[in-house]
Length: 188
Image 1 (cartoon, one colour):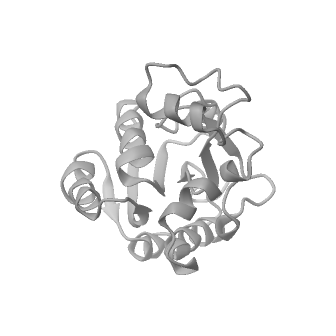
Image 2 (image 1 turned 120 degrees about the horizontal axis):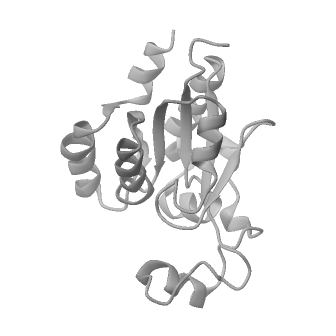
């Protein structure tokens, strides 16, 4: 068992249909790539989380403002290219890809079962968007008593001001917030 066996890096919603909306070029995802590389090098569990829906969108209720629009527009089903993990952070064999049906990484997924089975008590979070999956997962994971770290430069949001408020004022109440480089140096 490695020194980091109780820690998992969650790479959340870094999938083609979401990452593509935020990417200026391939350097946009470089912090995510560096985080994944550092976790693998340290022998840490890397878990990928994506949002996707079954054909016919049975999980998207009409009262859900965000997902009911998606079901009308089409796409984002489990087999669509848009829901596959981006090639720049592609999972390796043995690294789980968890499918969720809501914003939080825990919502409707088997993430908690995987974490329990692997004895994980510490989560390192990165993802797209800071105000979406990262915020929802920080809140839920904190309520589930996980120790949390958020990698602020491996979180993207369409609103830079919202991102800044979350990583500087909201997340520190429940998580350690650091850059990928700062975090990677703690793994040595």
